[in-house]
Amino acid sequence: MSEMLEALRLVAAPDVLVAIAASAVYGLVVGSLPGLSATMATALLVPVTFHLSPIAAVATIITASAMAIFSGDIPGCLLRIPGTPASAAYTDEAYAMTRKGQPEVALGAGLWFSAIGGIVGTLSLVLMAPILAEMALSFSTYEYFWLALLGLMCATLVARSSPVKAIAAMLLGLLVSCIGMENPAGTPRFTFGVPDLLGGIEAVPALVGVFALAEVMRALTRPPAPPVPERRFGSILKGQWALTKKYQLPMWRGNLIGVIIGVLPGAGADMAAWVSYAMAKKFSKEPEKFGTGHPEGLVEAGASNNASLASGWVPSLLFGIPGDTITAIAIGVLYMKGLNPGPTLFTERASSMYALYIIFILANIIMIPLGILMIRIATRVLRAPLAGIMPVILLLCAVGAFATGNNLFAVLLVAVFGCLGFVMERNGYPVAAMVLGIVMGTMVEQNLVTSLIKSDGDVLPFFERPVAGVLAAMTFGALLWPLGVWLWRKARGPGLPTAKAAG
Image (cartoon, rainbow, N blue to C red):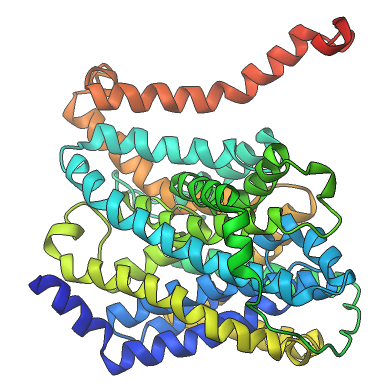
């Protein structure tokens, strides 16, 4: 109880409350602008967190990401242009409801069920994290090695692009993580005589480059968005309780899918929304109505994407393994503020953990009134010209990169990774897999080398410990899964009759 009271005191601090309010407005505005993702919004916040207290810094990440994921529904509903990748799964459905004269129902469903999903995801974090933390206290470097490797494999397994391209992007990230002297051997690698590379590649400039700067470059190649018609919205939350009662099963299924996918490293809200929308259509009693402005898919996918946000913090807080690209940024902020991820965080800094839980719940509660206000003024925000927004984002990228290391080399890194991210996206290579390789490469290498030193070069201990053996089997399963699927399809052959045809 004393720790909970201390957590309430931490959250009630004026700087934390101001940070929550400011980042909520910021996340709503950025998420509602077409093409500006929640990850980009979070990456641009990193320089601001340098000057905040630890709890206020993490509060800005949590609140801005939750708001941006919801507000990405607004341009999707009104313009058929998803504001964030997570809202792309059900953009056509929401836009169909707008054409039927029901934009407030579509946006209200996105708001209401996003808030419910966020709270359910937070409860899963509260329940799962302490139990897993006790288990993680018995982990050695062998288990951590397999866990990090499994995270990388899962990131490639759930990628929407080709598994081969996802693995290639992940290997590129691992190669980038090898640069510098920050390795167990303490020898320069891939520095090419450049002193600035001896310290390795910082994750923040890479993240800002591939997500923010690459988005600016993509905006230059896209045609301008169509003008937003002036629209008077009715009651935003009217009828949402009726939808809640009618679609209880899809809502809870979406929450469950979001929680499970959020825990998988590298999956995140984007994948949760796509999977949930597909599940809603598959198990619906009215699948023929999907695509015509049917709210069932919005209910399940909206609940799922925000549920995955909170559960994605479970591997991040416990093991330092990012649940998605947003928590990859958050891990850097946690280390910077002395809240080093790991199972001891739940015992030594319990009040800080309770404070994070409270911030998650608070962010999803204030999402409802602020979301209603945002929907009301949406037509004005969406009229903001990208020609004026993109130069500001470009400036923030440069300032944020310079602030991370107080040198111009970080700005150059942002430019390099921005170009790299732009080229990768254009050719179908997922940048999220590369980012996870950069963030987790050091963890994989250090635990591998430390384990080999402990075992005197023997590889048997990597498989002899029960937990390590299970994690190793799961890792190889994730690695060989795409090959197994390919061989199965090859064995069946294109000419074999299906069961339905044979019957």
